[in-house]
Amino acid sequence: MKFAAIDIGSNAVRLLFCNVYDDDGRVSLKKAELIRVPLRLGEDSFITGKISEEKTEKLIDAMHAFKSLMKVNDVIDFRACATSAMRDAQNGKDVIERVWKETGIQIELIDGKTEAAILYSNHIQERPDKDASYLYIDIGGGSTEITLFSKGKTLASQSFNIGTIRMLHNQIDKAYWTAFKGWVEETTKGHSPLVAIGSGGNINKLFKMSGRKPNKMISTEKLKSLYTLLESYTYEERIKILGLNTDRADVIIPASKILLTILKKAGIGNTIVPQTGLADGLIHQLYKSRKLAEKS
Image 1 (cartoon, one colour):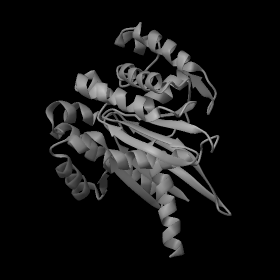
Image 2: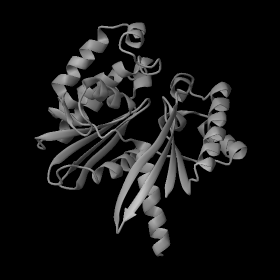
Image 3: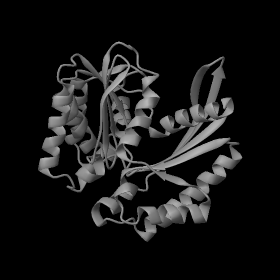
């Protein structure tokens, strides 16, 4: 069975195709294809408070294209969700309504805690040690989701309006940043040793740059050295010398800063990077809902 998920984020819009296999109750998801369009809705939403007509039209064009691709790929079901940029935009609901009228794609506007729950539900199945404690971290363009879980139970979960695009445009005030650091330190106190599970395009890129093999840990010290390396280059040099995409070369700096701040405050020495995100979680939930509906 092939499912699809559309993740409308602050930095990019993604369409993920996944084949789902069920072998006597043992479910596995295999990514078929991921399409990413760097619309950067957050540059409108976080700076002007609204999504511009130009970005709205590009989003509609992307949804038309995604709909056609889902049709030719014989997708049996899909789900589309929008996060921080659409949540914060004054005209977010109007944009969603227009997309529905012009493309027939219904976009769910999810809040930060729902986003964190979807992300977390996808990774809880994959944790390597069910008796250990983990801090799940997803860094996006508009928000950062953090979930602390130990021995299979969620102990704390919080969404912060701290993201790479917000930071690039100085949209995070000092008091909020201080409160964010305080929450991480207080929440993780007494849960050592902790291992982080990192998610998001920038964390995935940092992991690839490290040369580590998939599903292996990357040390905080290695992440620090990568951050130092990236900071030593200009934006243009990160593109020309390091080979980063134009829409990655700028946001990877604030993403590194956010990640390293969390790791420092939580006293974490290692991070697992499964290279999955919100779209994967949406498909995981979509399949579960479909199976429950079949049983009822």
